[in-house]
Figure 1 (cartoon, rainbow, N blue to C red):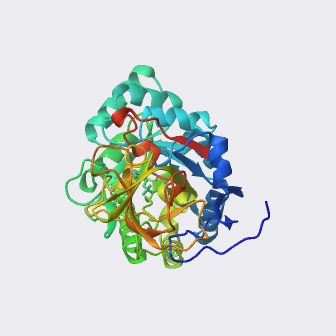
Figure 2 (cartoon, protein in one colour; figure 1 turned 120 degrees about the horizontal axis):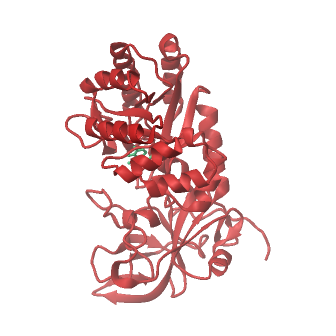
Figure 3 (cartoon, rainbow, N blue to C red; figure 1 turned 45 degrees about the vertical axis):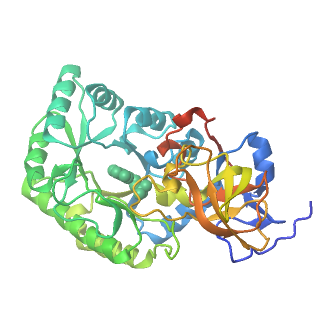
Length: 415
Ligand SMILES: Cc1ncc(COP(=O)(O)O)c(C=O)c1O
């Protein structure tokens, strides 16, 4: 096969992180039809290591050196992905015992793993205490249970307090703070709990202030960072305590929908440098960390499904594929979207062909919610073609109801 590289036709969605070679989308140099044969089935997710590496390298280069980067495993817990991330990030954030056990098995030092999430069971708390994982405590009663368990086991628990600030991260896809929330402890109650931990035999690690996710507005993130540093400073002053670490959250978004742009990081980074200087006397010895999920892995992943049938219904062409909502709930619009919009899609084996057909791409499920792409203009599709959904490296397989209607589960591969 000759390796003439062709620029994709600009009409249908392409994402610049992947190369097109001879009419085919490639993942880390491999054409998609070859990957489909290697995997031996469609649908599948393919994740590109080189895209993850580039994202991490860019982030490290742009953000101030004092900032540590953690990966939130919930975004993509596929073991080869987590193992790869282990060599790139400074720590992991986990949200269950299951994720914690995966994280530990990558070899990440357990004191670089933090466990957040409401409703941790005593079994989960025991497991985290024994492993030496930092527990981001979500309520006073959770703290009481940790104290009881650590006392019974005679093991020091590593405790950080997750704070529910009064402010919110504006313009977020998902807001997690401000007002009454199930996440974290209301900020006005936190200083007393810091004092309580410091006067116990447990270890106070610091504060966790995660205010939202999927944010594409630098000014909103900057405002939240300013408020986060100020809040952490006030709480620690009130408690007359130092902290080993402060997790200032993450929330960097990625563009999914028409009109959305890549997040511009330079002003965010300048502001973080300024904050690190401003709070140097108080936080000079404190690790400042951020935790990201989708920003690190989302753009590196694609979802591939295969055209099974093509039909016309009253003038509308439908492309029926073997993939859909059961593998990729977020692409179907049913994972937190208010109004459904299309993720970027293309035809992986027809990348250089002109897009001239308007189609609705659906999955095999008996529900009108099972939409892969609604009214998109793509090259003329045939049975056997491979439809690609971009920006699918996060909240894909792990966030989808794969058992629904008993279709085969989706495969995954990291290349
Ligand atoms: C505590 C916490 N950390 C990290 C994340 C990851 O968010 P994202 O994938 O948008 O970066 C979430 C998302 O809900 C979260 O709740």
